[in-house]
Length: 117
Image (cartoon, rainbow, N blue to C red):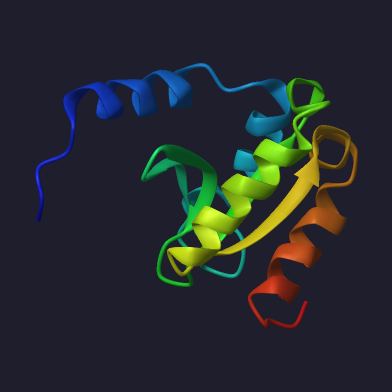
């Protein structure tokens, strides 16, 4: 296993320790194999990016788009293209969905994984 960059490792830890309320809401759905027994990880390093939530075995990247993403559509497209080029399928949700539509988000994730709900 290649040695990880200590700066990137520290940044991932910082991101995990300082999750936003929408990230915490989504993590409560995903953590501890709660969604159909699928293992998810937070802030997974992928090249220059950190995937908000990832099902590594299934190569599914879940990204939350909030207020900080307003006006950053081109950067999001570039990020998605990069992740897809690395073999990830990317799905995005708004912060509002993560906070108020937990069931719908869970269903969308299962559908993206080809699972029934």
